[in-house]
Picture 1 (cartoon, helix red, strand yellow):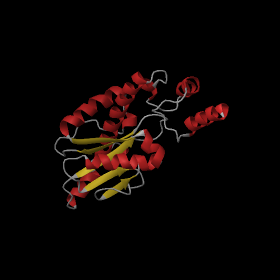
Picture 2 (cartoon, one colour):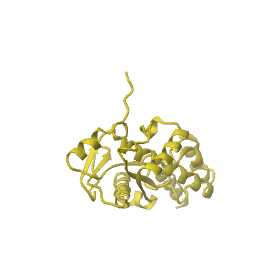
Picture 3 (cartoon, helix red, strand yellow):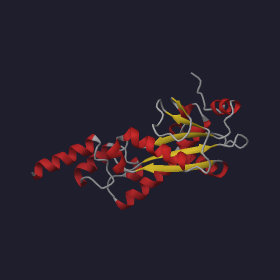
Picture 4 (cartoon, one colour):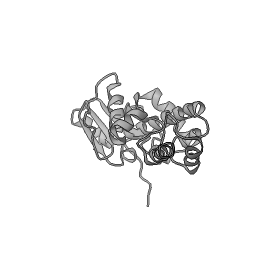
Length: 212
């Protein structure tokens, strides 16, 4: 089976149909038990496409960082987050969409079309949108957004790990690894944990039951 790479077809088709400003939008951080969800919106310059763009999950950490720097140097980029409190209040899907809309709103110019990774468009999308399933493997703009969001969020989780040591966020980025789950049981729940997520909720509920 040959490996396929994202390309600029969706962007080129949109531009051929009159869209001047096309962005790719992706988020990272739906699965972790801690930290915000982070989204990026990226408008690539067709004449200056960074070579080697791919789905962030298919790249090494070092390659992601190098591409992240290239994207920031050669494209228009906006990054936004939805907080742990917003995730708990809205649910993770709606919070992811909120972060995406914030990223789009942060661009210097409103896009004519946003290519959104996934099968659903955010309800409050501030421009025309196209949902692209497995978009980070199909669209260079979405792949670029996935890299920016991933590198940004990983760096943020390293910072949060220094403020809340013991959970291993500098290694697991807040995902429910065995060590993270054990630390949750040993240390307890931090202010950065998502209380609506089952492993965290269950520990809080156990603590409440014991103290009642």
